Image 1: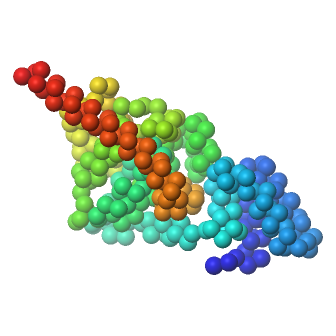
Image 2 (image 1 turned 45 degrees about the horizontal axis):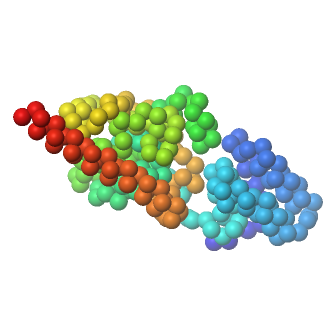
Image 3 (image 1 turned 90 degrees about the vertical axis):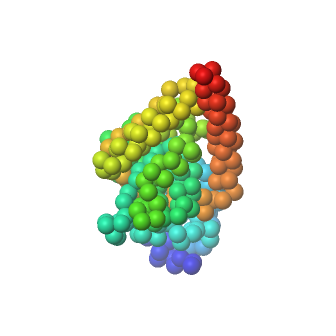
Length: 278
């Protein structure tokens, strides 16, 4: 659906006031707003703004909210983002629970869980830090203590927490304390955030099983912590694998290649380790 002039102008105003908008983005938006206020040609000024934002947009170097706006004015916006946040709620506490996992870039953590039976909703966000309502730029700086994570709402009648955590161990590198795969930085470190005592027991048990398996030469460093406030990420980051399928597949391929190699080495190490023990 194409936005009206009033809707576009309102979004520009909101982005100017948004504290997460970078100064040079704010300058371009303010210049456009002032030109539109002076009754300049609306389409001409909007086209100029799009042209000025385009080089950074093509390099994925706009802040998430400005990226959303850019996609809207260029006709490439999706309508799924807000729906993701709106449906992400525990509507039946008797049969629904939350699980929170951090294991590298949240772009690659959504699809493995969201496509699993029994999953109601998966939301990308930030948790474990000291700042309220953190932005992507703030978390990426590494100074807030947050990690990128996914919060999962699941139907306990269809899928168990044990199944979810088994999947988590399969798609992460539990030996890397400084990131995951190509994503480097403390905001990408692997952490299991438990929401109740039962999850805590299962998490600790499965971690010990991974340690005892003998599959890894390096120490298992994945943390297990009590869940903290989960802050939803900007719209741009929600269901990234659906909105940017080509880019997502390229990132996923790199992760899978690493994991396949790591798991193969692990199987050989465990097999020959047991042979030596016998």
